[in-house]
Image (cartoon, rainbow, N blue to C red; front, side, top):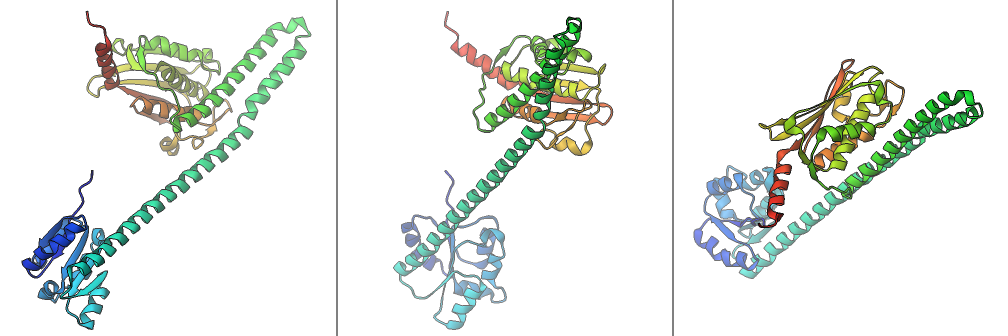
Length: 393
């Protein structure tokens, strides 16, 4: 619970300040008495009191300085309730209000009058804070609503322009295959076209899955079930088979350091991450290109570092900062397929779910390397939990 700052009592005499402390206590606050201008300015330089009660007689000791105005010019004190006590003279009263005081009470004053006016100032401050907080919440809600509407608009655009292409391809290939099946001599060609239709269908399925899972992750509904992955190499090869786009037409290699073969992660999410990174590499690499998957254990950083490198077209420098934002990095691939970027957005969210990071290093025309990290701590916590749950022997 945050500690409440005291009400600062800046009085010309210690006795007057001490006499006001019971009033401050009745309001539910602690009071702090200072007896000179130097102490007042020094304390408020590094502290923000709940409120300030200042005696004019103290201010008058340094008439060459406009103390109230000086305090108000300090940004943290701009809205701190400030009550001034002074003589019953219109000139002093109006001068203090003009300098920035919220209220002016004439001396002598009864403790109940001081209490009522100070309570009024504090209640007003609390209302202002509540209104400001509510306004900030409404502004955040408006921002989130606009972002949601933008995502919906982008999603609609993608559905109209991007999903239509693989659907049309599948339908065209299937229609043509049906016509060709009437001629038995064209069986091999039909099989090839059906294979292409299957690849386009897989691409369409991956798009839909990424859109759905990005939304589920944003809403905190994506299942996260980490366990020990016994063979990262085998998982990466399974991810390869999940990829559409004829990975057999690329040169793929897998190099996993023996110490990195076993790690603790959600195998389903990790498989999807790797499938998306391999798919991204294939889409932006020409036939005959090279794609490498590597994994190592970095003991100094306490991380497993996984990477997918390709020698494809690379990423323009201006796109590197927004490559993981859904829709924003959309661009055509070297195979004239439109890339919506939802796969990389999914990767970023899934990697962060594991407590890791993802980034890319790339040069146009020389290829790209995507890196992800998975911290040791996740695995170590799992090992401790398994030991704790192990039956006694």
